[in-house]
Length: 282
Image (cartoon, rainbow, N blue to C red):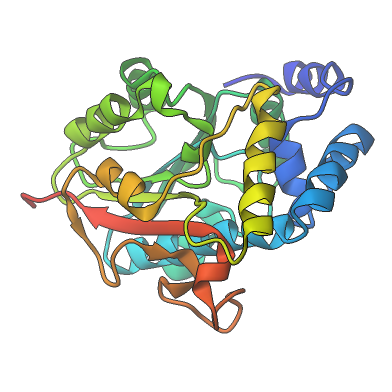
């Protein structure tokens, strides 16, 4: 865990380039972003006008999935690629679902700027005994898991809800996501839940939208976050055959929608797929 002064220095040294986490924050309507982030976001939105709604869809799915996990009695959460704390943080949703406040959360990001912001913002809202933000890389599961263990926030012998939300479209197949997700599934205790979502290029409404989604991928190709969109069939393998909770792997707005869910009437327009699966053996 980095210190407050180090966090401030990391934020200040990042203002010469867009931060993926801050761009996401801006498109969600947050205020932890700067002019360079907003300029990049505007470029994306010119080509994909609904990009902000897609990101809102991902965030809403996260909230509904965390709520469901907590309702099912899973009180420990690991949020990998958590980005910037913003509306609907995992610990906020979990605590609201379980007012006894018996939930515990470890946030993980490999972007120093996101970790710095998390350190600063969690200091105002979180319980350090139950909530922690640490550095870690999804692509290094053994090292990441050891860092989680070292926090002593979670009991990893008990079920955990592992959240990888709106991250896997930044992990191309050449980076080996199958082996990486297998490593996480193997180390999770029986009864654990796996929460996954990503953007999809499945069933575009027109050739124009198909090209716009291809252009979106091309924009990110020259950044530190190259992207790969996947179909439902291509994405399903990351659950490793675990039993999917109802309603399965679906367009995110179709996963237990509530009154706030965007694209609820036509979930396929959301361009986001997601699901939650349970590890057998509990």
